[in-house]
Image (cartoon, rainbow, N blue to C red):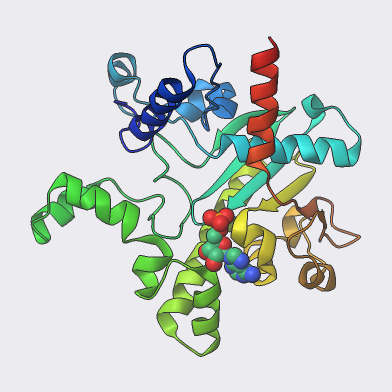
Length: 285
Ligand code: AMP
């Protein structure tokens, strides 16, 4: 509750309510969105702040969307007919919340979300990465409390904050098509920041990435955003086939050009299936 005050209390309330309703004899399984990222090495999960703060408060990067990134890894492995422990890929979960993960030999070794889901990519209403000094600046210039700034960064920023219109990518693309500058710049920032993480994770995986996977409402359905993210990445061996990209929405498949060294794929995520499988495994144990 201390680490995730917005998420864990309602989850606990649901567990208690279910227990009250069904009795203590019915097993309940909690599947944590942070679990898949527990393999992050210290160099990627620590913040470069005094180490004692990590020891005292468990203040570190946890990462989220782990259930989705784990599904994408296991589904990719089954599509390719290889063991999940041999998968080296970069997964991009782009929905209203967005995160990227670098997966090496089936394990998450870096991810863009941190202590909370705020860090990393530009999202629907979250700022993603930001200079921490912005908090002090806003507190003094706008006379805001820390809580109000936290709310601003989580709920009034990202695509919504930059565009001033909406956090919904479909509507933004429509408005950008009509020449709305702020919608255009919000989309441009979204793609640019995602591309920076993509390139960073190619380095993290030491050139061994074999595929980039797009998932989430935006990743699964927007050919324009996928193309915007991969734009100019040919130097790194990432090349989209534009016809395949346009044709593939909401289902599995490759959108990589035949001469792309690294494959580019769309895989609709399925967190519910992972949760069901985990639950079955825990209950059977
Ligand atoms: P999610 O949180 O995974 O449900 O994703 C929600 C986001 O996906 C919203 O920004 C939607 O606008 C976006 N989205 C869903 N369908 C499309 C589409 N066809 N084109 C662009 N964005 C889409």
